Length: 467
Ligand code: FAD
Ligand code: NAD
Image 1: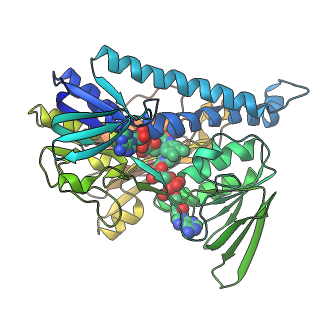
Image 2: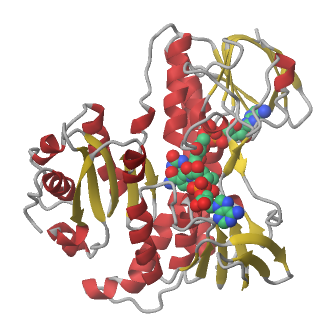
Image 3: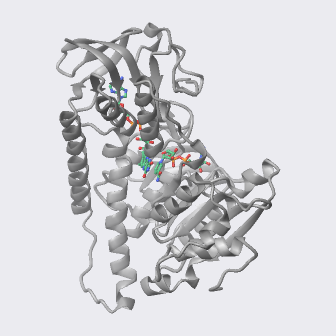
């Protein structure tokens, strides 16, 4: 009765999507999740709740700073954080319930409890009430995700020294907030509280924020965030952070070797995430995690044992929900005997600040390092009529195209609705379009997408029309 074609451990976007696809393909599938709700980091404490708070705080920011120019006057404007958190919780519970509905509809058997290997074909599920169930699986998919990372001296106490999880459930708007790490989480959650009135200071080890993106992005976005009140301490090495009662005290070393002390109400530690395999008893299946904590896999996402697969944040590659989903579908289709494919070069990256930031393909730095000669087409958002109409004039779209063939190799943007705009670039690059191809497509007017066409025109003989 407890024998399955596939057992999936972990119900994040990797695990639940994989279970769905397995079921669609006629495989008898079990999904094991240790928490009471499905959806993993993404739905419970990641993508969805952070975007809910980003949207609420953006409305507040616009009401406070931009409505008057639009001719809308409000008196008595106030941010009600507990209502924002309640709304966010409602969005999360509806989304998680949606996943449960999908599992039931597709006849995936869900087990709530901690899953661990008994042997290479069995998963022991221990529920919180102590019940133990052994599941037998012809195939096992590990989708156990990741947890917040931190370094010595910055251990979160989850009270004043917090991770993204606590930052999504604050009971007060901090007057001052320190953020260690100018990456995606630091800038998204830093934006939430900066918009609500917190003084946000970012302490970053690298010379630019978003250091893994195209260098032009970090430079331009620093200027935009400074205008919103962010302060930046670049090239600072954090030595320690202490909870000193009603405040936190952070000590860092700047690039001159001087000691810098900063104080605030809270310190958000956002220096990356680490793969999670705790209590999985990989050794009982004859597997082990790498030194970095990842489960090692081959190009088919198989571990050292061909019937055990691993996907999402627990394996190499970008820690993104849509990457985990693609891998979930890929593995299900491999198990069903199909021959799927993932183009890892075309996984878009998005930062949901305002303006949004999005990118796909190679950065200028990567092209230079690979010795590939390229052309650049750049178009500023402020030159768009649509942008002036909505008062969203910051940012640019940059297209990098091969010098000889004109093939689009990378697209990088800071733009209103960049999260959606980037999909034009992904589609074009999937079909190996040239910049000329994009330049010749008729784009609706007035739209933000006209900046894609203009950047493509700029990349082909510098013939942008509206600049
Ligand atoms: P997870 O979502 O981490 O799910 C793993 C699941 O496995 C969890 O539910 C866990 O409880 C369960 N589990 C672990 N071990 C066991 C076990 N032994 N037994 C049973 N269950 C187990 N990505 C984006 O693409 N876009 C975004 O906007 C975005 N925003 C984010 C915002 C924040 C604040 C954070 C923290 C992350 C964000 N991410 C975003 C990243 C995204 O959440 C992850 O990349 C994604 O959730 C990874 O999916 P996964 O399925 O690999 O793992
Ligand atoms: P990140 O890797 O995006 O950023 C971490 C930042 O911390 C980097 O800029 C790094 O240089 C800096 N850093 C590292 N060590 C430091 C130190 N000792 N002192 C100061 N700075 C230090 O990681 P994150 O922001 O924690 O996000 C974790 C993961 O979650 C990322 O992989 C990201 O892809 C994913 N995520 C994605 C989204 C999204 O897609 N919109 C949103 C949130 C999180």
